[in-house]
Image (cartoon, one colour):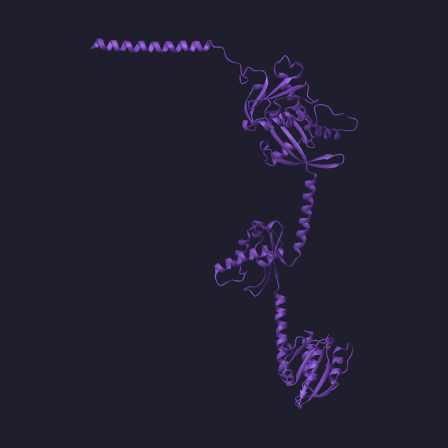
Length: 530
């Protein structure tokens, strides 16, 4: 048995050695085989791109150095943006490449040294090769093509920086180490007469670092700070942006004169507006799109009894109304839920310009509340105290009702006309005598219409023509009396009396009714004066 195990182990070791030797021989044989040269090899010096449609399959290292960073799927458009300025008409020529099979383009006059671009379309693939024009036949390295492309890009970037209207400069340990033309022009304007600009360049904004530090602005964040530069023609404002890059700082100064003028005009306008609102007796509250209080006047605090500190804290519309409700400055509904719904309705109607209500408050005041929409979704609420106006209106209505009750208690028929001949007032005695109520039966209660009614219900007489002339006559008038016989046989004594303001009092007494003319004249005069 031990001999068998030893024999088996020997066979396993022999097989293992044979396998290892075979692998070594195979590796040595493959190493001796010659490699095919490919454009994908890192030692290829040419500038070659290989595309499948718009997708980049591969490119030489020199070619990849020309491509802006991005995905290979969008390399075609990125390559056209890079090579388009170098080769005029490149996009149109490449569109015809599948039909032509092969094209060659020469770089523009601004590219030094000149470069050729050869395009080939083979088996559905597009191959683009950049070669130096002078050594095309020798097929030298692609370094000249790469340098020409980089020089073209450098020239374009220099042109952009030189013509930029924005001040640009770079600061190092020794001050300004580079600046564009706009910065140089500003620096030259600040020099004394007869002095030329020389290096090192003057620092136009030396206090920018101090101001940024005092304001707590981090330079790494690239935030802008507004600063003023005193020029010979006056002060100019700039928004200064500083971004550190290594040991240096990139600086940009954007002109902000228009912004400063607009902000100054807006501030002056807001001050004027605030002073105007401060003198208004109407409480004004303006809420923005988020229904946050942005502007109010002192009358709002007086009318709503809200503390100015609360209003300055920019509360929301709901908070303002809740605070007014807590101070009993809003009509209390039957339940809180309906009150909240009313607030929502207030906001919706006010935003459409439809809200206008009269609030009778528990304290006895009466407010007129108007909501009006403003641009950009803002909302304006106006609170006006109309308590005095409502008191005067109620008192006037009470006086009218009292005067009406007084003349209704008189047995005589009474009719009062205005200066224009319109019926102002009549009593129950008049309605019973002439069997009609002018306010209900007649659409036009004027002296002409009523005289026609009286003429139809009385015997023929010229009295009614004289009555029309007396009521419509301007100036001084003399009281006079007359009589008319009604169709039922009653004799009516009619008195015409002028009143203050051109009004006229006419009384009708049938069958010896009580005399009440002087009393009626006094009552009518008071009503007309009220």
